[in-house]
Image 1 (cartoon, rainbow, N blue to C red):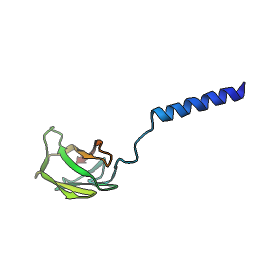
Image 2: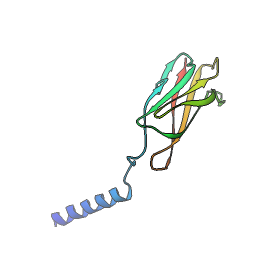
Image 3: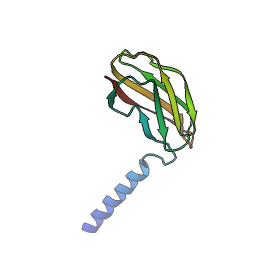
Image 4: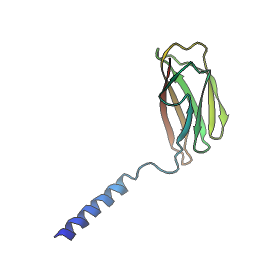
Amino acid sequence: MRATRYLAIGAALTAAALLHPGIASAHDWVVSTTPAENSTGPAPTQVSITYNEAVTNAEAWVTGPDNAVWSSGALTGSGATYTIAMRPSPPPGQYTVHWHNTAADGDDIHSSWLFTVG
């Protein structure tokens, strides 16, 4: 009876793993940001993001505590590292850096991180 229960539990776990395989290894991920995620400091003049591998169709923009866009101009860079300029004199508060790119398998990948201007 005990062996049957363990077999049933094993089969259920295997089925769950097949139905929900987790994050595909073909997707890139962020390895560093400037300013650092959840950091507090002076107003940056630019924001940078570095992925674990080269990405395509990279986009990023920064919104501020007033919900206005505080990034300026186009995203620059190539491969795995990109930078976008900030407008001058951003007010104190929390900023969100939104990013988007296309993974090697063609999936759209997007997320964001926060920093605070003190």
